Image (cartoon, rainbow, N blue to C red; front, side, top):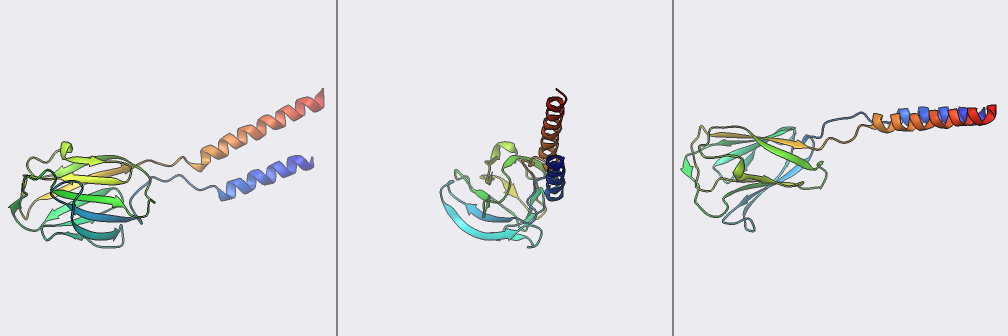
Length: 179
């Protein structure tokens, strides 16, 4: 009987410390921003960091502002020009503290920049690159990217599996006592 009470107490304690499932987002995370030119190994300008949800827009070398939300990045252009046709002419957003859940996809939610498509956007678990070499823009140009990260396994699944294990152990013990 004492063992059963101990098991019940342990289960109750696990229920108290279980965290709810939540979608992984950029909100509250620090991202770094770099302007990359003329190739992916050359940082033309380090644009600093942004605490998503707290800091305002980041200036993109005078031509655009980058704004961040929980699941998107928006570039809002402030002037008119055409980017040079170098191998790479764009920006990189990266996870400064290695705290963001791995990036699993980046989509082009909306844009009025002619020629910008998904082939110019690359990413890995911690970085997003946007290459707009040779593309033109004006002060009405807006580009919005959708950023998705892996969703951590909900704690309720672990609780459920532990519960099934406890039920199985109790049933086995009951069967052994009856024999």
